[in-house]
Image (cartoon, rainbow, N blue to C red; front, top):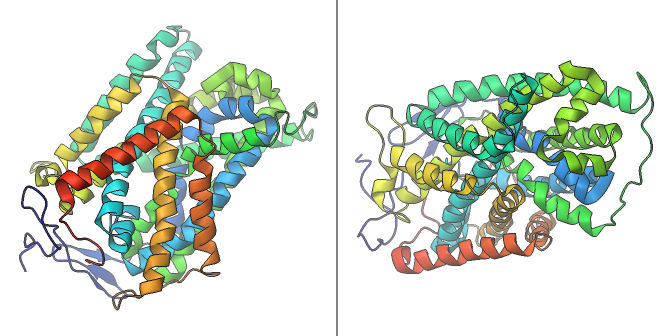
Length: 473
């Protein structure tokens, strides 16, 4: 069968139609026209992907910023983010077992709600990942400067942005030269990161409870009231952006009706507990006011407080690894988002060209790398993080709406291995919570997010309004 034969409905202004690959699923593999994915991933593999994509920059960059906004109740902000992620994880699991495609949330929404919603989400996902990557790179810059300071080379915060830009360009080139290299780097970093965090949180937790040192001085749990807890939840939700990545490997998972939802829910719970424990340990070491003064690298001083110079070096090293891991994974995901919408004719076909030497989508990577470096140059950590959360929360809310739409119409091809318990309450709560959290962001972030969505809707009207994607598998 000719893989270039378009079978999607309609064409864009360049007279290009979506390229749709029919999928055949068996218990042993998922087969498309040009690939056969063996089902080799079990529950442990799914958990590793989920945890690996979520444990990153947030756990090292956010504690000082979050404690300054909400005090010790910032732990509740991270818990709220985890609960919202759980309400979206279950609908995403059902959709992934019904449509085991690599496009993830974009694919579910475009096939469940149509081309307009798909265009807005697909292009917003691309830009949302661009904002997230820029946030990770700025965080990396702060940790790089602190690393140099620990080595006795004090260069000052004036080097934060230049270092972030230098490594952002490097990660883009790394991904162009092959995803295998990028994946090896990612797996190694996650393993080291979990080791550092487990040791630090174990010792810090015992110390904070007074079991190995002096008990921490009590501080009022929510000194600024309830609203800052919610505004902080909107800021730190960036920390949970990776859980939906598990949906992209549904076609490679054994017994997906069981392992996929367990992987999503389990990874969100584990990462949520780690984030809450981190805030508890950090606010037990210093008051929230002191943490806020320490800013993006407050965790370095927390490490020094509990374990002396060794603790500071371990956290600096962990922060570098985390920000590298998050930035590298996001650049990879950003390019794949561009690739997916291009194959569906929502962007020109040339955006999904593959580099013949390295087998990577080099044009898509270029479309990701350029905007990332431009936003990194702004250095606006909280704005970058909130806009990334805004655009992802819109996608998560629409995933829940797409599930309701598909259940209501129940097309003949819709046969998921897993169905959401508590339907329709669970997807309804997931949608309301996702859209509702946006209301607690700062106006600048909301304005940028809305502008991005209006611009993507305008692109749909100009370029892809005649393309049909709803129900096209």
